[in-house]
Length: 333
Image (cartoon, rainbow, N blue to C red):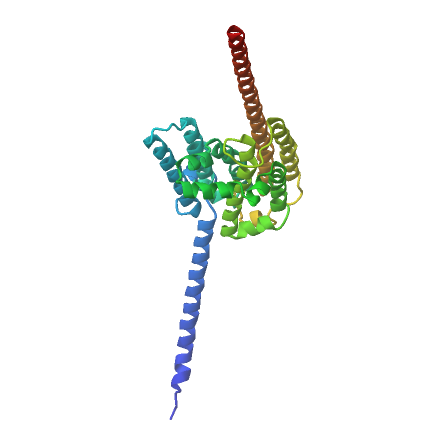
């Protein structure tokens, strides 16, 4: 009698089922990888993509909304008690200040900051040079000192005039941080690390903003910050920053290695060449840096001239009062 082993009969079927299951799992994994790649790699850069790729779920967006709300509340408090606050300061702070930060971090540009070096360089310029200038022109520290109660006001003054604030806002220290930071970021492995880790990239954005504020706020001098130099020293410091952007921009344009290593080529973008984009990034840093530095230098010169005019009018008034007192004394005698 022929004996048939049940196990031997079911083994081929089980093998077929296992193979089918393995193939299905492999297909699913491949589909998931393709989906993930489609999410990570944005569509070709365009104005439409900048609008459609916008996001409002980042911690930076929450911080911008909170800062705008606190600033407007301070202005409301001043007007409620009959005090005046210049409209231009509010426009500067909310528009090019906070709005500039939002334009390069909350808009669709954020989808390309790890895809195109040129987009990251636009972010660098706005966050470290453009927005901090307008944030300083909004004079938020002065607004806070005029609206806060006595206790918080004293604590804010203690922070502003603390030893740490004096060190970091000293013009030479702030200038050294402002100049060294880009070289430490782009010419080390730190930049590649920020490309691979989203949280590190966000920290770099916040660092750009803080570095720009520390450098530009004492130069503009609207808020009562320590370490402010006279206008000739401020203008000289701003003039020294012009060749720094030229050197950094030309170095990036003429570099024979890609920043970030093989990060950008590994993306496999068919609509952008990493080498051409790096040359464009260097040109943006060079031209944008010089434009902002020269404009800022012109602003400082104008402020210097206005201060000289105010000082001349003050001296004239003092001389007029002395002359009036002398005439009164002569008539009395």
